[in-house]
Amino acid sequence: MKVFYMSSEIYPYAKTGGLADVAGTLPISLKKLGIDIILAMPYYNKFVSKHDPEDTGIVLDVEFNNVIYKTPVLKKEYKGVTTYYIKNDQFFNRDNLYGTPEGDYPDNALRFGFFSVAAMRLLEALKFKPGIIHLNDWQTALVPVYLKNTNLFPFLADSKTIITIHNLAYQGTFDPKFLKDLMLPDSLFNMEALEFYGKINFLKGGIVFADVITTVSPTYAKEIQTPEYGYGLEGVLYKRREHLFGILNGIDYDVWNPETDENIYYNYSYSDFHYKKVLNKTQLQKDMDLPENSDAPLIGIVSRLAAQKGFDLLADAMNELSNLNLQMVILGTGDKVYQDLLVDFGTKFPDKFAVKIDFDPVLARRIYAGSDMFLMPSRYEPCGLGQMIAMRYGTIPVVRKTGGLADTVEDFTYEKLKRDPGKRKGYGFSFGTYTHAHLIDAIKRALKIYRDQETWSQLVKIAMTRDFSWKSSAKEYIELYEKVIFM
Image 1 (cartoon, rainbow, N blue to C red):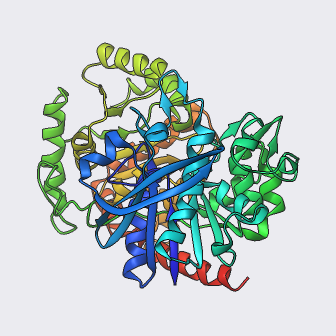
Image 2: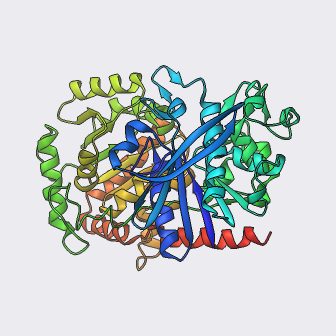
Image 3: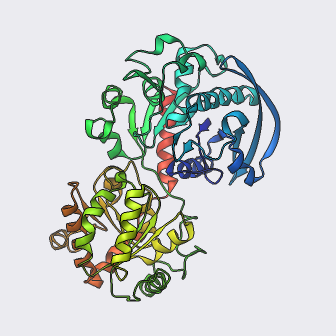
């Protein structure tokens, strides 16, 4: 089976979020399972050049926006999978992928419209005729629109399209004047196609015209069909519900492995975590200027600091949390209001809260390894990787029951243990109602169990043996590919 996988960012070449992690790992698992897969992404000069890509010798003549762009193609192989880069300095030789702190680049419609057209021209040049074109988020969502509504790409007439929604909040909405530049007919500007409150909506186009839509967790697939999580597209998604599937993301267990991770203080495994995690914890406390106390429950947070991630709840809860027997380490960057607030709490309560406003991958791993609990109180979470990584490191998640967090974290209670003492199935703590009172209640329940170290050790063992690797998810994608091809 031939699969062409398109993403606007792919780890390790360029990354702003979880999309890059998925695009950098899922194709590798698919390749191992026998799929003939190649990838494509824009050549962001500032980022991709650091990886020494190879010149393919291919220069595409891409007609777009009434211009013929001479478009060099480069490539790089990583873990057996080849990524092709579409080079256009006018569109992609910039300091960032999508915009500046002041806002998105005003020509993003053209940038990613061009990427979509050029990537399909690349397939012609390579003579690679995919059964499946797998797309990701709004940046690639025009591909099914082109294939279903134009005659520009007869080479791909038999290819089927799948689009994965990683976060429905980001849709790619633009002035309808771009339709002509994108070489799309004006007739698509209607409610059944691209029109969305007076603008064109790239993601809506992908949802309407792709053969299948997937999301990154089963629960999120259900949630986005409701007004609370649908961001205006819930009706379109409900209409296509028979073609909408949720497949849980995974993590790379070779990359996230406490036995081999060179960035943590002390390596450990399932058999010796009891004292090795304590060593990681006390060293983390020392480095973060917290009192070195192995008995104090340490809660870790590694996150984008934004309301979506629950920091409005955390802000309301911090005063009460400061009165509990706990410590907290917070790492991340994001909205200035939350950065300032968290730093202020760290200053007021230096024995309780350690805050670092930064993107620090090494410290992130040390937080995963050294914390007792990992907090994710998200308003919504399409999948979430942090809770999976935390469990891999024997750190118990405390989460809001939404999206992928609901699919991966099973709530533990003493009542459940009493009902079935032989099966300690719960291995985390969750809350449903989005209030700071319910957040605090979940943390208090976790703190109570933490004091019972025999039970807590059982939770850690269960968490460490949960399998969130890509293997099972990749098999689900292959089953879906086979199903789509014969639709």
